[in-house]
Image 1 (cartoon, rainbow, N blue to C red):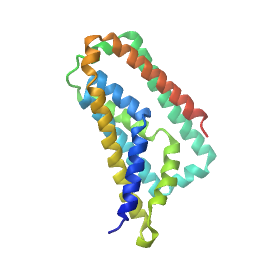
Image 2: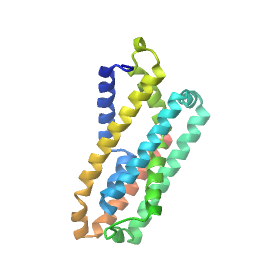
Image 3: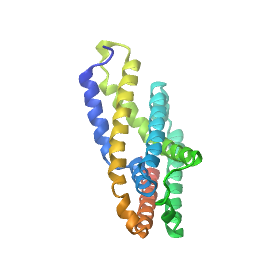
Image 4: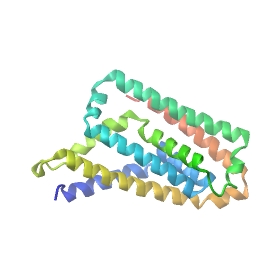
Length: 213
């Protein structure tokens, strides 16, 4: 067996724990599940998973070490991530103020363009935080059994397993949020408060990312 299953289980538990804590991705997914339904939110989950695979590929390619050691590159990526989260937050607040979210509740299905936009949003949020690359680079090697050899293959397998665990946890978040949809449908104004609150939270996360070291 190319990996130590005890270490894989340990990494899965860690991934599940981290995914259970609401972050930008979960915030975006749950908001979409309430406003447009579970199916729409799952496109964001899919995009976020693709973003996670890109981070894993960067770490395996050794680019994570470059980001960790290059202060300028880290700062540039951090600013880009913060700006994107800020844009998402402002867009949510503007949508809430305009009242356009009321129409979302009546949307039964989304055209391909909307689905593509959801995937792109999930992907961008998934790769927006350069600290995720550094964290992944620091955590993954801890679960490698050097006696088994081929550490890159081990990290690939463990990383993919962790990604599946993350998708599972985020799906649970989406399903739980989707159950609240009917409550919001009874009073559409509630969706404006949700959208505005989510926008404020996104802006707060953007500020936290911008100042974090």
